[in-house]
Length: 133
Length: 390
Ligand SMILES: [Cu+2]
Image (tube, rainbow over all chains, first blue to last red; front, side, top):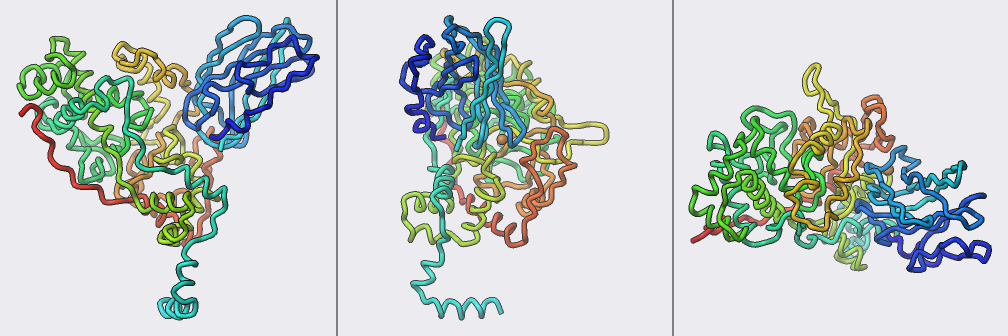
């Protein structure tokens, strides 16, 4: 529940990634990357509360600075073998920017968020863990 | 013998020692977890989908409607028949009795205004939409779609109460008047907030570091609470100040209601939600922002919803049995035994492995019951409502 602290200062764009817009506006967010992709996201509102709906604001890029597509975002609790009771929908804002609405974490513990991203024919699943207390 | 030992022990440790002994060690993680079950009471409900929510005139009209049998088809059944103030806003029965016996227990209305899903299966996404169902259901009040409108137009006191709450005289649109009846009913029900209980005093003392006050909380309840937030993991679902996530779970209660017929729980509830013209996606939602419809818009119906029922809050729980959606467990002790011994085979195949036999000892079970009973308090007697339009 107290995520604001964990969120602070995790956004450190290096010169090599300068073309990709990783600043989500408030100097806060998580950065996730793989060999080919780079993305930044943050919840809206910033603090995720158990049982309260929230959205994710996301920027998705390829490692060489191009915009990429966000195909799907979902979340699950691996230890409990269940997902969310809700399905998020994605709105593309252009230039690799997205808003995914409709998240709700109904339990404290470890949630794994999965992001399916694509550029051209090449798609990939990125993941990020959030621990809700 | 036990008493004698206790006496010897009391003499040995002395009065000051006894005080110090009465507070278990609480780690900072545990204190944080306990703190999340408060503070109590929460701020009053304001439901943006209901324009009379939180308004004195809406609440007053709602209380009178709640006690009004003329809303029912035969003029004999009011909401208060099953939701009784003296029975924790339920009826003490295993299964609700309307015109016929129903398949589920009457849920308590304590703290109902803070929920987001209503009914055991969550078929309602607002308290007012949920309140329409028993008004119309032939097995319950059987009022029919025009009954509420005819009543509000014909009864002078109620017509006046309606005008005070909604700002205009009851019109000719019966569907609108049915919805408004339910909105007033919801405004009243949302005021039913359970009293502070011994747990709340302990929680506040523990969080503020007042060890002396905290030590007044019985040791058995302290041990039970430690189990509740620890080993037994009860607070994964029974979380927050109301001790519920407000979501749904399958805990291995048999789902056959009679041979060949099952209660599919949340799976059926989500079907009814989508088909309900009074849900929050419809025209009667008073929230212009649409924000309060986010759950309804995004909820997904999944196979795993079969056999899931809403996680009930636990305040006043010791006073409001029988337990489970179908009233199949008579006492709190039975409930703890269920969680202690539940067979994984009884869980639906997609059942979350969160529910597993806890294998509690007799002492642990008694401690959990002692903790749960510390969520009970005697409610203040309710004065009868003031006349609507004196
Ligand atoms: Cu979980």
